[in-house]
Image (cartoon, rainbow, N blue to C red; front, side):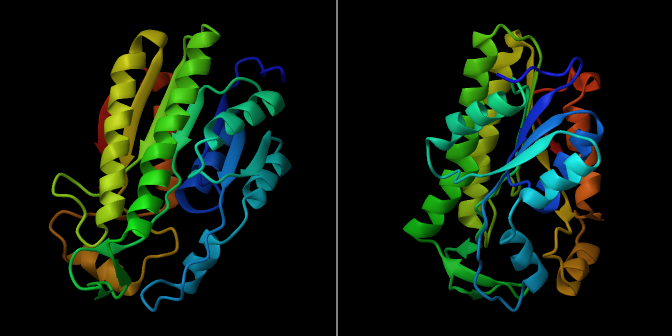
Length: 271
């Protein structure tokens, strides 16, 4: 097993090839954390409501972010990881421990995002194409956004407790709300499940020095934000900002710090 650097931490960040995940990986690395960055290239169908640059980012491989971290003097490597496979969680922790040392920060960022609906399929209010809810859409979202975080948390907890560790951080990302997520219904349902898993982890694992929180970002420009989206934010009485991935990453890295030791079992809504 690799020797963990004195005073350093080791993190797994899922979905770290673009957007918020990439920003979190770079920010944690600047704070001296070693990173395992997971990625899974997704080729989305052409959609007039979603910029091609965003589809290209989702299809990108994850080595670039790890290379940037190493070029800046940090430690990082990337792993192509199918989070819908139940065996992936243990394999990721095995890889991180072999290369970097024991993992004490887990950021569940990856998403199998699709936009689906119970109403008639077609373009939504922002011009994006909607699919009808199906076994495929529900299975995809529940596997990546609910089951995978649960298995990663379980693996994190088992190894943490097994080695008698006393410090750990679990952070997930969510969306939707108490009334679900109309026009992204499977995504909203899967994120609600992830919230429940993470809140349970916060209470069950507190005695072992682990905090667990969920971050609900505002609309974040990871490449999918169009003029129609910006107009919708400007006209909304509830939405305030279109954030950058780096702004969201700042909150996540704070939650992963020593200063956030009293912050646990929260869904932190950013506006």
